[in-house]
Image: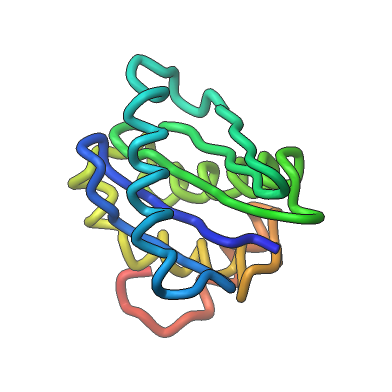
Length: 147
């Protein structure tokens, strides 16, 4: 199960978060832990260079894309290889939505389209779609005007 997907800026401010099966009282802990993990390891990292961390049966795969840090947390059958596939789909759709690796401003301008893409990739903690063309087709059918 995918426990969380978070997008943060380089200062550690959360831009998008999706938690699945994580109690509300644990979410603050996860936010601060992931941002600290990224601050320690993502400085000077190349775009889309993957980093992996694990503790017991929980895996974390994270990367930087432009000015945005992306974290994916999973457990059990969603190991680091499955999470790498998820994060690849997320970075690919984010680049498509923004047209290039995003700055924070560009990311926020395309926020709606990125959220729709994210919802097509991960739904209620389960991996739904990783095929970029299918995701583009699915989000075109959604009602928001900015898509």
